[in-house]
Length: 354
Ligand code: MRU
Image (tube, rainbow, N blue to C red; front, side, top):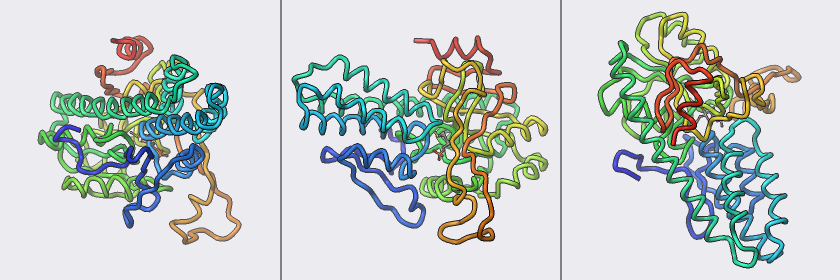
């Protein structure tokens, strides 16, 4: 990683095993979990030991390498057909982040080119490591592009709001939206950083605040419902968020609550920036209406930690993503360039660029 990257990691390949920092335990405990079976990797993605679209994709890529090792040991020449069930299990772990399916497809393409009679483990580990490194590089590039966009805007030096966690914990390292915030802070281009707590899983409170505190970047935590008031004070120049899937027309799926922020930003004249690598684009979908939105257990809404915060028997609705229409997005920053006021044509031009 480059010197401006973070001193901590959340995904490590060590001793031929995948080690993940358990994000369910942060910020109170820094515990690592090792994985040498594909089922463990599936469980860790589904149960949110690891989360964030690019991080899920990288984890799945290492999961494919682990699966291949086991299948080759058990089935030798038949490993390519027997691994298919493992790839399906990985693909079934979470539904919304397209990076998961993108990474599995990329690993599947490598599998297709490998011989049947040679142990595939080393080649697949190398590909997973390449995906991991490419993601870090993309984040560093997006960090600079996003910071430049802020410097060129009439919002230079103003406060920013971010939502969920889009940093090192959510990616291979450095982060997407949080990467832009890191780069913009380094360049003195932004004022105060406000992090939405991000109910119900509290990615903002538990993870974004933890990362920024580790970096020494001052962060102010606010309840999600405080965003409208905050924007009305005139302190905020940009909302900066990541994405789990962006469709061909520029609609953006991201953590529940992102759509509300985009509507509020439009009303208050605040700019709205989405930061996502091209691996987050799903050009097969024409609009965000077609994106599968994950619903998780209502317990995430009804409790905080182990403690119930609603009466027993109360129902809960827990969609964990929403879709922001392209018309509310001022810019999508990718590693291939910036898409301003996204349309079908401007998205295609940047995503298909070499
Ligand atoms: O449910 P999560 O925590 O996996 O959701 C993560 C987000 O919504 C992030 O904003 C998104 O994946 C972009 S992360 C670079």
